[in-house]
Length: 278
Ligand code: NAP
Image (cartoon, rainbow, N blue to C red):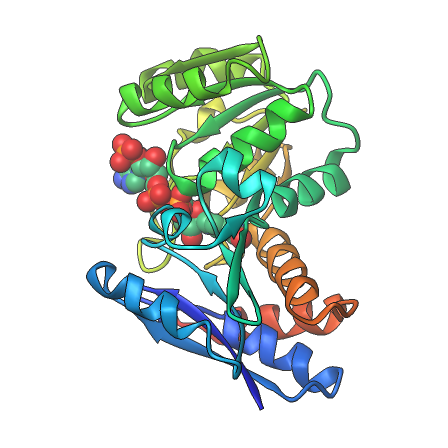
């Protein structure tokens, strides 16, 4: 039997094991996905253990996505560009890092809206997930405003993206009202509204309007307060569940070379999330 790990700290909240194990079972692949709590100071050792022939690969979550980039043997182009890894494949002891978060977010947004070229997007956050989303949006000609609690961090991200796109702005959360008035898409890439803080929202509901797609990367709960209020304002909504499943499906494809059973993965993820207490 081969093993895939999720490296994170903490990891107990993750539903990736439920989703990936359902996929291995559905295709009769002799592999098990295990959660592995790894402190940042132990990451290098945990990475070396991934070189074992029994390991197919791994996923990474908070806080390891950036730290991994300097510990692997090779990175794919997107992981290199973003500076973050969420998937590792063990090629006979040679570890290659990938980032499936950005393409997964792009696919989810395209399914909801079609072509994103020229769309005005307000992105909340400048952390790991926001970076992946910002890169795919600029590569797809969106006009992007990045707003973050720490405005300097948003400014730094915009500087990194400048080469890819000219239509970029950054600011603090106090610019939200002005930016949202003319936006087509709002992406929440902060953890605000995530369980257990389900009463929190990153956006005053009076700023939400028809004609907006509100995409919340938070997937627990599936309907956050932000999405519920967006619905009430007549906006389209997209939860983080699709992105979660699509990034997991791409990881599965990279590990196994097989077509991921996405419907099985989606059902397993939704079922696990429905069973969660807020
Ligand atoms: P991260 O690297 O820790 O970044 C968090 C970002 O949120 C930072 O920009 C931070 O601002 C901001 N933030 C944190 N608390 C805030 C608050 N109370 N008010 C305003 N801003 C706040 O985390 P991440 O990896 O990017 O993850 C962000 C969210 O995306 C998490 O909820 C995660 O579960 C979700 N996510 C979902 C998927 C999916 O597949 N659906 C994939 C990846 C991540 P400062 O810079 O000012 O600290």
